[in-house]
Length: 158
Image 1: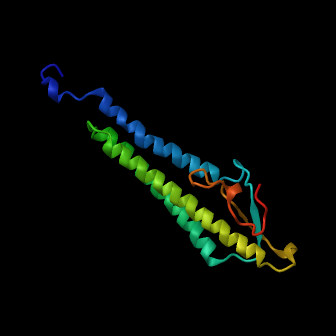
Image 2: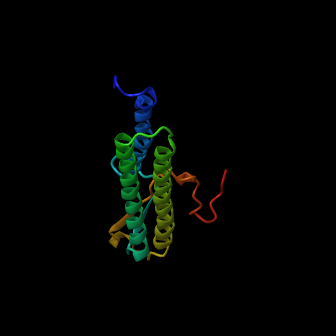
Image 3: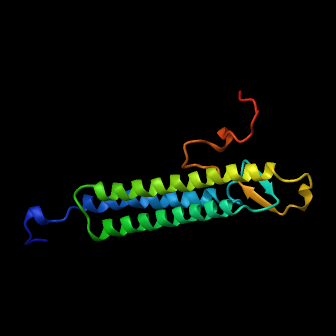
């Protein structure tokens, strides 16, 4: 450090850019937390007598979005530690991609709740024999709260 020119010394502030993509990891943990039924009680759930294939596909897509968001966040954090840059563009880009993926996961859950609602409405009158249930995710990263979802046709809005 003593023999290096001042312009080539790495600054400590550049190493702090790792906080930005690491915040994406905190968002991933929040996305996993909101999907844990023991941690966050679901405001809505549907009793399903049959599991439609599209509901399973959307649930799988949601999980893949969250796993990809975690990978992007970890990659961004490791890159910020190994090769610190002067500008925060790369860490901010990793955080933005992470958040877009988490919004995509909540969007898949939102679409899945609509499919579960339609499936629950189509159930026969003998609901006691149904074994499946679909718990609606609160959707913290989505632009609409679960209470605002228009799944109940004819319901009066205050």
